[in-house]
Image (cartoon, rainbow, N blue to C red):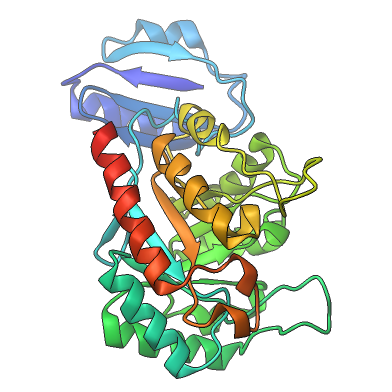
Length: 333
């Protein structure tokens, strides 16, 4: 249920209303906008008298929400949310460029790439330390050592670091990570999502390989319902009948997610296509359809990369693409 409070309503009356609603065992999500305040009622609202609420002089309107996701719902939070990662803002008109290798391999590699992508305009550095791989024989990442190398690259460049967490048991290692990524395979690891809600760090939540938008939003709901409102959604391609690309990049998901939710939405064209030459056109399309950011894999020596070299751009290719992305955004402004 949503209760819309009139503009300039008496603050004391509003506080009394919130206390009364909480006394009925309801959770209250308060969203203060420029023109109105929205109270999102979470829990069993069947005992709430809508007519009584609407009769209050501070209440503008009362609506029931049919969707099962509440905290992430734009009806609960009409204005775009802005997630802050260090000095970088994402959402609400703030665009992010995340770039870096699929996996951290050496200090020289990650620092070289970090310097290159920063020079090209990236404002966050990605790099996998813990790598979920389809085959148990593939490179699984440097794990804790990889996290330390990412921190070295951050110290060298000032770029906030983005890296994937695979298990709640590893959370102590991620205390100094700026943005924690939940990969496609873990999108419905609900125990992990709840722990990330308690952990409090910003979370980048990727859509699963075969998951609906509603399922993605419900996974974000797990994080937010546990107390963490700093969530970014990521479209990274889904499994379809495509036989030439790794996945199908569902760009229609971007405007639909913006319609359904107030959370920022970014796009990962690297994992979606799996082919380096396909990344630039899909990145430009992502910028054109309203994404709040783009995450791209960049490697200084893709041929010898330990992971996903085929989809990685070289630094000079990324620099050229970054200029085109900026041009697209200027046209749309």
